[in-house]
Image 1 (cartoon, rainbow, N blue to C red):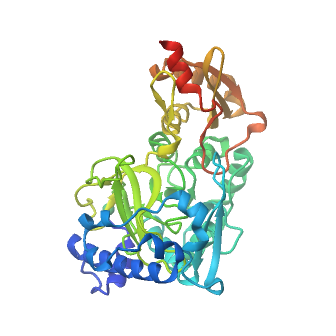
Image 2 (image 1 turned 90 degrees about the horizontal axis):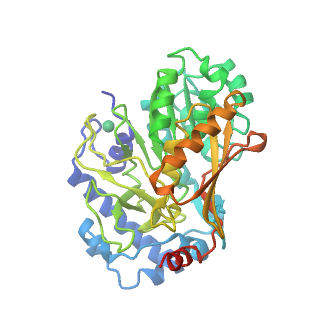
Length: 445
Ligand SMILES: [Zn+2]
């Protein structure tokens, strides 16, 4: 079984002999050495980290047990004090990525990258894609790529290094039109958001792609539903790989090998941990918690123990491919996006994804929670194939009503006007206001 070639980045970063894979102890020695350098760099150059790391002695940070001596960096720190985290002069900043996440207020997040930082991402994309494609093949990139050094652009340049051609299509707004266009052209592999790739595969043009024409698909940038992996791989008889990465992690974070059992992490550049979201205490492999990482090579804006807000777990034991790299199971979405219902139950987008995207004919959906005098209501707006609109709506309504945790909610269904497709990370919109839980609780007494 072919490994990813992400290991090669680690070997060259560790200056180890090619072909000789290091063991976990050697990888961790390398990582903690880099982390100590990062701490020294950040404390020396950034006003934020100078304050935050006062009293931390880098020499004491030698293993996972000592990480708790380092404070976390939160998303809120990044929003409010991001500028003070910068460790290089403005001249050395090659790219700034600004993110105003949907469903949040306050200042946007701004991430700064140097030329060297971007080169390391490009190198990761280059090596990470070698499990999916061979020289001479052609990849369709369904990610934004118009801006230099954007995700799509870096990926295309990484592929060009291995003589793989690509077309950056960008995000899909109209799947029927996009599918008719791209499947006429023909591609060996696709890279995109799970919902967007699923939508393309369900169109008539997507359904008529001969089995084996598309060899591999890489799903990224969002929660990756099991139902989407299974359906896309069955529809095109192709392998479906997962990627984990965020802008904060430098776009690339980890990618699956042919064994398709967890993303091999980019351990040359990132040190991952999983902690309890409430207490911040580290959790062992196998346990679900909040993903936290520290950057190990970032020059412009290092992040130390950055709390991603993503629910994930590390997998115990080595991969079947023989790689010594740590593996990350499929991330289960944003912890803050799990909605508490008045009946004591919870509702996550991941659950709705698995349920609604499994209905044939559904291309995408939006979910909104609100409340009125009669209690809480979940409204789902479905984007469907035109010919399957009514049956998709009926089936979705039926399945939502059968879901025990939604028993006390009113369920509203609607078809999305104009077939609108989400363009980016999706959330359950929550318009209930702050009082909903308490009021419901009091009413129940
Ligand atoms: Zn593997």
